[in-house]
Length: 343
Length: 198
Image (cartoon, rainbow over the protein chains, first blue to last red):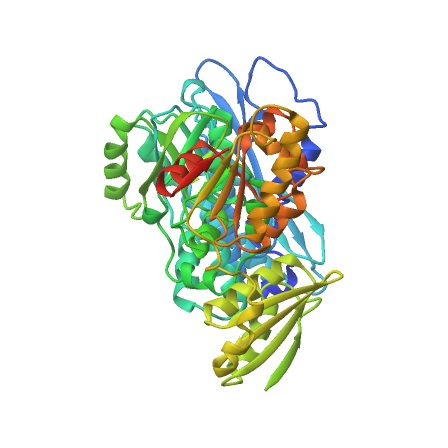
């Protein structure tokens, strides 16, 4: 089977997300619902919705799907599922059930391609300890796949992206650069980096999330289409803090800097950069590293905001559990409105 | 050797790949890549720079003509280099009001126009001009010194406006030149460089 799935997609992975600017303009015209049991709604740009069922259980619901970011259908299914499941982990929950969302040109592409995508998704959902209970499919010239995932969490243990506190340290659990390297893959360049990106994208955030259980994490989100700085901005703005990032310690996928310097940068990175007006860079941060800070990630890592006294303990736990890229990348510096300084 | 690469209508990363093929095919010479969107323009310029080529961009309508010079011919087009990096000095201005000095605001407006006009004319140019408080009224649409600031920006001077101040005056949407900054950067800039506050 020699299928090049990405040829069917204008923009793959989270790079096909509607830009934050365009999206917020539309969403602010809707009135958010008001319900005492709604613990997390759409108003804080969080990863998923959380609804309290009773004193011990709240439901987390999330949905994510996108067009192919890689050519291999089984790999695409795995990446899409890891990416969808991630939102539940970012809220502090455990995935329970999932439903497939499929758009597929069944007339042009063989059914075996769809089967491979679904098999990839199913294998990741199984690895997460959850089950697929159904789904929905439509005909579409551009294939798309993802999952709606339902998870559970104790109402007191919900991790939002809006409860960081000045003084917290920031931990990032996966290396950056999947957007740039997916672009490099389309150009048949940087094979080492491309393989590393694939392996990173199919890695569940399950282990990283489980490590948080024993610590008092204030806020958590996963880094996806808006890039590191876009998601950090949402966290800082939601928490009314300002943040700083040490660009010199950022975990980066191999070849990512070289690919960025070469101009293999997805348009989503520029969209993120143009939207984020409250970011400032020290003059010493090179352009390719700045670009990676805005690079849209697919199935990116968790970004955790942790009290300084617990950060080293959590970092050690993450690394001991095999989350090798986990790094303290910066801190919440002061009360603010989402200002970010990168040095 | 001169090659034209028409990359209009191509999706990312094809404009970079087409330019790379052309560049790899010659030892020296000039390549002109034509693209129809700002993302492709930025990516092709980055690619050219990463190959130590000289690069300049001309905008015609919605299309960008990117001229890339490789090898010996490199020195010939130095004067058209897109982003001059050595023309500026190392000093920084912090502009904290929209007029020059205290007293008559009418005179202050005349003087601030004259101040930025002179800044454009006189080298060395500053490294950065920071705008805070009512100073941000100078970087937005309708500013009496917008032309001068755009000229400075085009010559590589960093123009930065305080985001809190733009918010306060509700001018963020009207920002017409440069970027937005915060107090960290302002502090960095005025402590790391020779700074003059107005």
